[in-house]
Amino acid sequence: MSPPPAPATAGPGGPRSHHEPTVERRPAARRVTNPVVRESLAIWVAIASAAGGAAVGLVLFQDRRPLSGDGSVGLIAAVTAGACAGVACLVGLARSTRTTHQWMTRRHWGWFVADAVGLLVVHAAIAVMACLALFRLFQEAFTGLTVDRVAATVMMTVISAVAGYLGFNSAARISTRSLSSLLAVFMASGMIVSMLLAENPFWWHAFFSELGTGQAGILSFWTFNTTLTVSGLVLTTLASFITQDLYAWARARESAGGRRARITVLRGGLVVIGLCMVGAGIVPINLSDPVHSTFIRVLGAVFMLMLASIQWWLPGFPAAVYVASYLMVALGMVATLLWFPLRYYNLTGFELAMAGIVYAWLVVFIRNLDAVLTVAGLGDAERDEQMEALETAREAQAEPVRTGTPEPVPAAAPAAFPPPYRGWRVDPGEWR
Image (cartoon, rainbow, N blue to C red):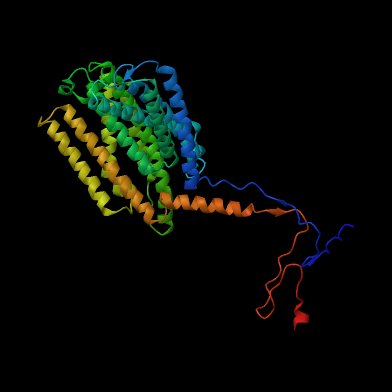
C-alpha cells in the first residue's frame, strides 16, 4: 500500500497545498557598472584580440623577420594592435554610453559619430606608436635579431591582447580626466613622431607648420596633419565632457544661492578651438597661407579671451585657478613679445611656447575641476556609486514572484508572544 499523503498544513492565509508554489525568477538587471563585470568583459575582449593577432601572425609570417623596419614583425604588429585597440575602444565606449555617459547618445547622432571616430583614432594611433617604439627599442638592443613564424606569432598574440585590453578599459572608464590625458599623450606623441620622421633636418628654421607642408617628408606631412585634425575632434569631445560635469556642479551651486555660471562660454570656446585645429590640419600652410593662419589666430584669440574672463563665466572656482589663468595670459603675452618685436626666437619657438601654455592650463583646470566635483559629491566615483545603487534597486524589484496562492505578510507580533512558526499561528486572544 502506498503511504497516505501528508496532511496539509495551515498557514496564515488558510490551507496550504501539498506542493510548494512554483517560483518564476525574472531576469536580473545586469550590473554594468560593476567593476568585476567590467574586468571580465575586458578579459574577453583581450582573448578575442589575441585570437585575431594569432591568426594574422600565422597567415602573414612564413619566414624569418626582423623586429623593426620594412616588413618587420613590429610593423605588422603595430597595425594589428591599432586595429584591436580601435575596435576594443568602440566596444568599451558602447558600454560606457549605457551607464555613466548616457548623455552622449541623447545628443545629435553627428556629435556621437565624431566623438567615436576621434576616440577610435586616438586609441589606435597610441597603440601603433607605442608598438613601433617598443619593437624599435628591442631591435636596437638585440642588433641583427630575426624571429621565426612561431616567435613572431607569439609576439603578435601578446601585443594584440594588451592593445585590446587597454583599449576597452580606457573607453569603458572614460572620464574628463582620462580623456584629457589621452589627448595630451596623443598630441605630444604625434608631434614628436612627425619631428623624428622629418626628412629635412632643418625644418625648424621656418615654423612648426613646416612639418605639415610636405617639404619635411610625406610621412611627417601625414603624421602632423592627422595629429592636428584628430586632436581638434577629441578636444570638442573633451569640451562636452567638461561641460557635462560642470552643469551638475553649477545647478547645485545656484540652488545654494551662488552666482550663475556661464558654462556655454567654456563649451563654445573649446569647440571653436577644436574646430580651428581641425581646419589648420585640413588646410596646411602650403595649400592656403591666409586660411591656415586665420585658424591659428582665431584659436589664440579665443583662448586668451577665455582665460582673461574666467572669473566672469566660472564663478565659485578656487582662487588659485584664476591666478593661474591670469599668469597663463601674461606668459602668452611675454611669449609673443619674445617672438615679435624682440626676435628672441623664431615662429617655431613661439608656436611651441603657446602649445605648452594651452596644455598646461588644460591640465590645471581639469585637475581642479575633478577636485571640485569630488568635494561636491559629483565625481566619477560618486557617479558610479549612484548608477550602482540605481541598478541594485532595479534588481530588488525583480525578486522571485510566486505564482501560487499569495501569502500575506503577517503583522509583527508583540515581544511577549512566542515566535510565529511556519505552518501554524498563535491567536493573541488564546495566548492571553
